[in-house]
Image (cartoon, protein in one colour):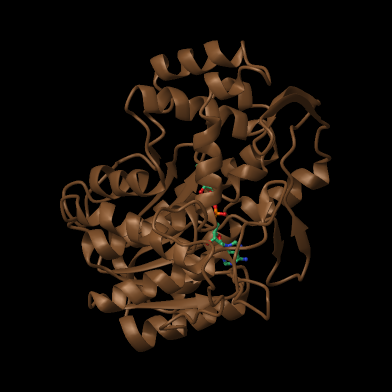
Length: 396
Ligand SMILES: NC(=O)c1ccc[n+]([C@@H]2O[C@H](COP(=O)([O-])OP(=O)(O)OC[C@H]3O[C@@H](n4cnc5c(N)ncnc54)[C@H](O)[C@@H]3O)[C@@H](O)[C@H]2O)c1
């Protein structure tokens, strides 16, 4: 069939298998062009199919030659419905890893469930023995608690009072004012349950109890802080409360893992266009302005550049058991540089619909958004008949 983008707001309901494969290949090529990493041997990435998780998996496999297990929640194609982008990305990853003799497996299912945790442990026992790096990169709107069965929904809202700021419709380029009412206490609780650290902690506990976590293992989860203009909707909002909980979990896990020489980190990453960040009000406009300024200053990075830098300069800077002494790693350092932020804010205060494409990198934002789903990718014939049914090799 002919596969074209079908967008609904910040969601694209189609994905292109060849475009996704090319996007994955570009990330692999980037990592292979860097200095090889003296990194981990067996890596588990939870939330491995898109965004920061996929880039972490690619960095581990093609930068350090690590064996990888990717856990993710993606859908295969069905009839005339294409698979999700993460499905195609992972299929491409698995094919390329196999071609280069790098061992890998995929597990598709709900990472929040006990069943997927047990299945992952079974796979590690059967094929890998232990894992020495666990990356936790799940971003989800919902979680079913594995013990109580309660279904939690996460919301992106301010806490305490309503928040108004300018926001962007990146399809039309329209800049308008968005007002978001504050979350209720229960919405805060539910967002923490979805995006906080409880599930990360459960994974590490269960891996350790099953004896499949190597001595000296490292674990890392991802967070965001951002500038003051987005603080009410991010850092001080519901999601920020969940990230505080994630940090608390990192400290607890670090305490537990350090007994065997292990470490737990939260890495604060740069704002980038992903399926998750596109859903946050105000943030896409900020990202467009940030892209423009960081590109002008030649400081712009995408997911793969961020993740390579995380591994090379922080997690494995001096070999497999080295790195930061603090539980918080800041690879948002270039985004937060004073000169970058001053320039972004100068533009922010002048922004309107008429000047948005001049003051911000609106086109770069759009390009990245469509790239997430394998569209607007060089070398792909989007008019060609394409089979949406793609299998994932090494699906466990
Ligand atoms: N995008 C940004 O700007 C940004 C910046 C800093 C930090 N982060 C953080 O990075 C992490 C990853 O976010 P992202 O932007 O890469 O998101 P993303 O949407 O690209 O990736 C989310 C991943 O989670 C997986 N997933 C979702 N629900 C799942 C489930 N129930 N079971 C198994 N897998 C599931 C998806 O399959 C996908 O692989 C998040 O913690 C996010 O807060 C993102």
